[in-house]
Image 1: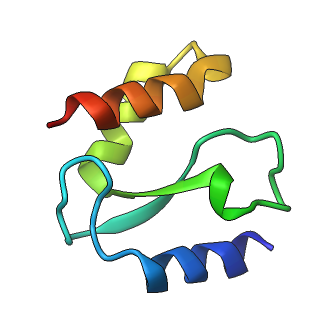
Image 2: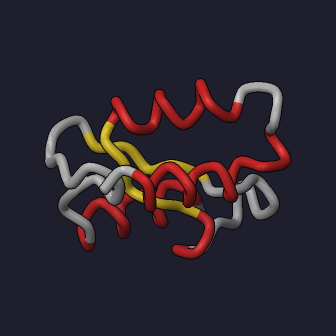
Length: 77
């Protein structure tokens, strides 16, 4: 299921949700509650740089992954 949702997001979205880059895009999990059965609400398109930054910020706070991701995306502007 993840492969399908990943391909769908990559077709629909064209830039990083945080910085608007179109380079090195990756599909980021907002949470792992539905891992293997993700929906579009469980993932977000980010560039590799923003994705890595979020995972550095969330390290040790995995339960806050979704909250930290949205704070990062909103404050990137």
